[in-house]
Image (cartoon, rainbow, N blue to C red; front, side, top):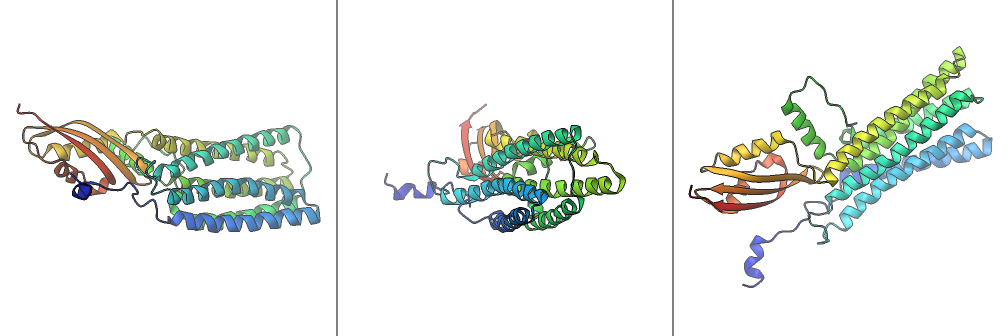
Length: 319
């Protein structure tokens, strides 16, 4: 049998990963805005002797590292989308970058918490007017960045509620499995900056007008706890993708029910896992008295399940 005769049974494993994602363009815009703001704050801080501006500029630079990881991951996934060494394409590069950025965020949270505790014990003199101005500027810049990155990244993780039934949990987890973890990580970086600015403004105003000097480091501790919580949510979501975690049982049951309604068929084995944002691979074994072609059973998988790669084993069983 020659190559041409089997071509119709062959397919690639790119699954659209060679296309420029909208998150890549938006991340680039946010990086440019952040870089400009960082340079301005550092230069003004140096020339005007403002430690607050200098410190905030350096802080923005640390978050730029996380944003650069996001951008590099998008570019890498596109560049190597046609590389056959990736069994199911480069979709998981997205989650790997999100996981890495989340680790960086946890480190930032630890540094923030440590510095806040230190200042709570050993208060330092604060130049309120400059610090408040910096916080307002940072809030505007990060607010604009959040708007640019959009709603796709707006999922902090860990928002399960007791009043939801099991089906709701399954659909929520299914949605999270399809999350663009790379874009979510970029969103979390600017969100944490914006949140830090809001908490700083509140604390600085309280310290300036009511003498509550302790409010500034206290808000730093609160901010560190929130950043850590969101980061662990992102780590959990990305880890499930990286470790080929099965999608929720309720969704698998739905697919099994549809397949088993066809010609006295039974599903003996089913594996469904995420291979990229919103795309899944399936491995299914069926046992039936009336065997059909594997392609027939593939067509029974609902189109809205997002399965882009499926392997089906068909076993004949007269009994």
